[in-house]
Picture (cartoon, helix red, strand yellow):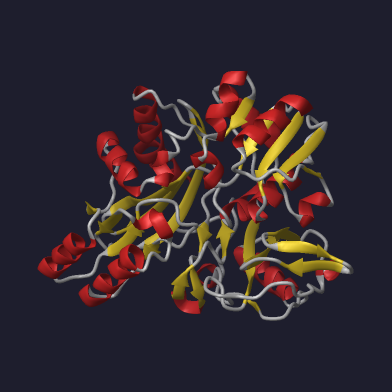
Length: 425
């Protein structure tokens, strides 16, 4: 089978790396791919949102399975275009993908499905939104309704900061048209966990939970980013918790989407808050998480391709993947200034010195004369395995210190709260 991985980041590098391990794959292509995937697979050069170009490529190369990585490709309708041709696609249609591309739609869907989520209000007029905050005299989480590359959620401390956040998104247009409509959401306390699952339209197969870190700086300070690292497994969210989340969150949502004529096939990601009142959903993503995919996929003991193919065919019944007992910690190495202004084009050194079994998944690199250059805000996700979170964490940071480029920055507190926690029994 020929496989096409759509996207160009660290998530897609990890998917490509895993796909190449499968005896079922004759060739792995990427659209557009990256400098890193060019060294292990075949880059097409096609942009992830070039729906017609990808459709032609799939037909010409006789691609057996297309795996959609980024949300932009989902929203562009790639699955809608490929599905009628009879080609297998792992990734939802644009309509089902509204679970990520519209926060307001996701909230309404959860209400219809009976899924617990913080209370909210939707606004299209900044003046009305600010009048509401002034009347309530308290802080709200401010979310752009549309796709904002992980930068559309602002968490102010009080009412005055909430007003400023509304201006930032709706008047200053920091994430563009994504904030033409916003959601004001109740602030709740707890610990966040990411739960991804394979969905075939009806059946749901959960992957191991992971935790990611959205803030740019240690101690969860600084602006929100696309993610600065993560780890798996999660000591405070065990197998019983996963089962309950599947039963009360993922399966009900999949059922309603099916009933409403927009069945979901692909990876469904739920961002959960675990608090004293139980589990509530903060967000959904219509694809593998990034950096969660980078820390979960190395723990998969089975072939990934049959799993994705079964989901794409609607045949996940009886599927039960096997997972490594080892823990995984991934650290994102970023360019100084990210997620704001940063410079690129700097040589990256040390990639050849990494310990065996430590993975460097490329998020933003380009090919230079003597190796790789920085080409993005998030540059690499460095992932290490270990018999415990503590061992994986130590190994990850030990190898982080072998990588160097001008302005390199990373969080140094990833998985600290998990020290001493065992891997899966």
